[in-house]
Amino acid sequence: MRNGEEVMKGNAATAAGLLVLLLIPVTFGCQIKGKMAEEGGGLVPKEQVSVNPKEQVRLSLNDNKERISYSIGLDMGRDLQRQELKVDVGPLIQGIKDGFRGNQPLLSDAEVEQVRRYFFAQQQTARAKALGPRAEKNLADGEAFLRENAKKEGVKTLPSGLQYRVLQSGTGSTPAPDQNVKARYIVRSIDGTELDNSYKIENPSVFPVGGVMPAWTEALQLMKEGDKWELFAPSHLAYGEKGAGSAVGPFQALVFELELLGIH
View 1: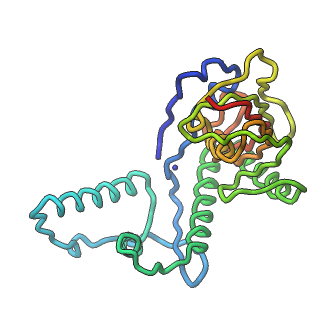
View 2: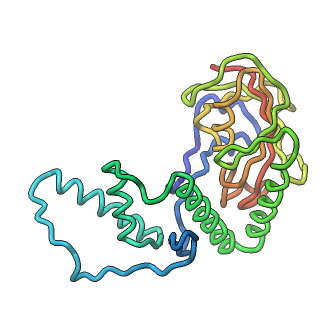
View 3: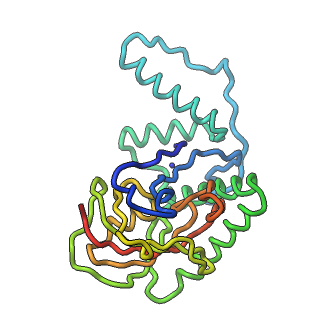
């Protein structure tokens, strides 16, 4: 979540096909123009509260601690404005205070997670609409596929939205984010079309656990050497709104077979 992409380097050069793109972490900035607020126990649209310049608190900023504190707040405010993310300033500041001071929060952890999921869904819908019919269809198709897939036997759903099914169990070690792994993989669209297959090349692929797409990074830290999993990734854990060339469209959910062969 954070704009930008960075092409990861190193041992991943041994891979072929889509692996080059798999090594691009998919991150997103909050570029939505929607509005939301928590009100009356439900989530409803709400206009942004404007701030009267006359109501600005005059601060002395006499020492470095005050200047640093103000600078952090100023950066946050400018970032929200730049991203056109519209929030109510009062609850925002109260949330910062409660989190910083360890106060009893006004929302439970479950409610906060519900708000995050709602807001993220609104972001995705708005971005897909802005990108056009193909993106909207991909997002809707992916969501429908994952809803039904979650009901299938053996499929488990993680809090991030990533779904997986164990195809083969290993007994080895589990890699850490800063380690490299040796693996084989197959990439498919949700209709079963094969997009890439590393089993068709001579050598397994080697890449950093923390340098691939979020779906792989998350799954690899749960897998053991010798494991083979089938992953069902929503678009935000795969290539997101950018897609991957002509093979993967914007907001396209993907299915992977990922086999962890070793840790380097």
